[in-house]
Length: 237
Image (cartoon, rainbow, N blue to C red; front, top):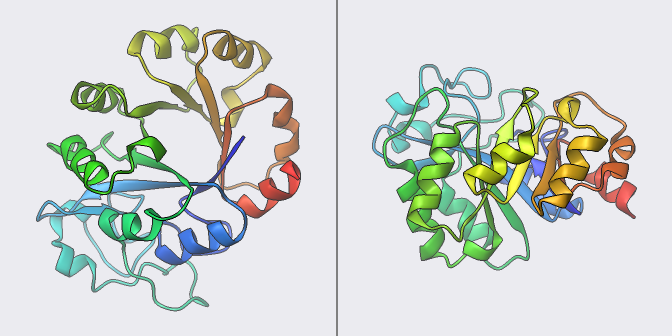
């Protein structure tokens, strides 16, 4: 089972920063999940929200700032005990991950702002670093996933969802995606069994609460996406 660190080691370090990614690996994660937006000048940057104010000392939309402007911000606002962290680019992350045996889950943040050509930009960088075999693309905007598949059908994709879809296995299969990424609350034994029967992976994601993750092991998912990769590592051992 893949132990995905949600936005890096978000439970203890500033989310979506290089520090959180490095600490996740040190904690035993074999997968990293993070979110990608486009800056004003078309650079792929790693941050969760469309707005800057929650996680950084900036204001306004990510899409309204150039990379140079974004790089001036402190991305560890929620963790004042940590040293200043910068908003990373996807390229910086790939420089870090390229020599590591790690699965990278890139969430395209296209649900609110449907960034033009973000799929193509992400794909081109994946190919530049020759990382296609270790990449999963996910999004709540399922149109974005279809666009990615149209670029390269071999790239593995995961359908993100927090609602209770009717027969989600049929939906994901129809879209031609390899994974379903549901929030933990919407998964039950029937859903897990149906995805297994259809040979579709099930990567369950959890919110910020500290759950008893062991309760979900009986569903035999292909992965957990959590804020605490250290705890998942302990459970799996």
